[in-house]
Amino acid sequence: MWLLRDTGKYFLLMRKVFVQPNRWKMFFRQLPLELEKQGLQSLPIVIIISVFIGAIMTIQTKLNTENPMLPVYSTGLVTRDTLLLEFSSTILCLILAGKVGSSIASEIGTMRITEQIDALEIMGINSANYLILPKISAFVAIMPFLVIISMAVGLIGGYLVGVFSDIITTADYLVGIQYAFIPYYVFYSLTKSLVFAFIISSVAAFYGYYAYGGALDVGTASTNAVVNSSVLILFFNLLITQLMLS
Image (cartoon, rainbow, N blue to C red; front, side, top):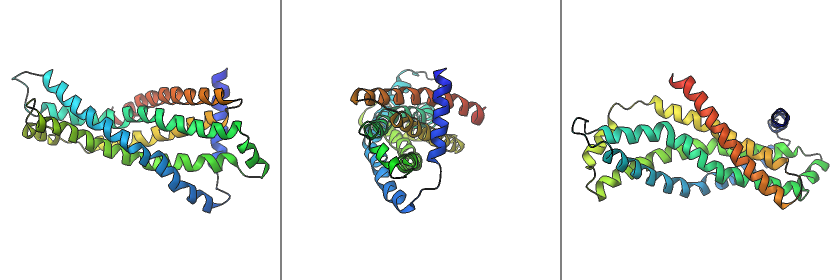
């Protein structure tokens, strides 16, 4: 019963969010701030995680496929396709659900329990549109760029394994990441990232917007936002993969 209730409340909230802003000037003033908060401030963790994951995947693939029958390009090929198909979209979004999702939920939840949202409503402002639309728009807009950066940095991480160790040569690695490249995989990954970015930002905003009570309830809202957005990401990952790769 709670699932139907929360689903209905979510769609009703989204209907309030996606209307024409009362003042476009305020929307465009908030948008760059949200792009910086959700995008640029997420860049360090994206780069750090991607470079290490690329390096680790290269090492593990090479060490676990020590077979003279396998072609020399297999390690780079596996690393590239893993980054393109899953890590730089799905796994990265699961990580950002913890960072960005909890941030959005706690920010809006704090405004709710301190009655700032009630004050906006009293002034006749559509609080859902004013607070949530810039956050969703900014995160959906910046997410493809974070995914592309993650792909590039992950491949660089694999290349660094060849530079600083003798596990694989850089020549073999470069052959692998160029072999049988399918551009559609990049389109598929970017499409998933747009859907996942919307899920993270909208679900986090939903739980923050309805966080009534005290500081403990803000923490609960942040936890629920991360958990439920992660579950939805996994579900839609399966659905989109079936639709786009089958």
